[in-house]
Image 1 (cartoon, helix red, strand yellow):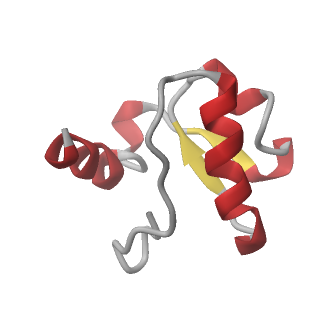
Image 2: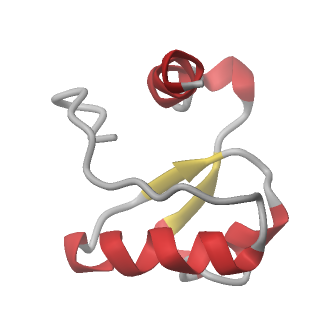
Length: 73
C-alpha cells in the first residue's frame, strides 16, 4: 500500500513462503520504493536491503496494510 494515498499498489494470494514473497516483489519492484515490512524472514531474501525497512509495530508504518489484510480475510 502506498502510505501517502492508502491505495493498494499490488497483492498476491499465497502462503507465507519465499515463493509468495518473490511473486509480490516482482509486481512491485518497478516502483523503486522503500518497503516498510514486518520482520517476516522471506522479505530479507527478496527485497533489496536498501529498499527494505523492518518496521516495529509501534512505528505505525504497517498499520494501514495490516488493517487491509484483516478486511480481506
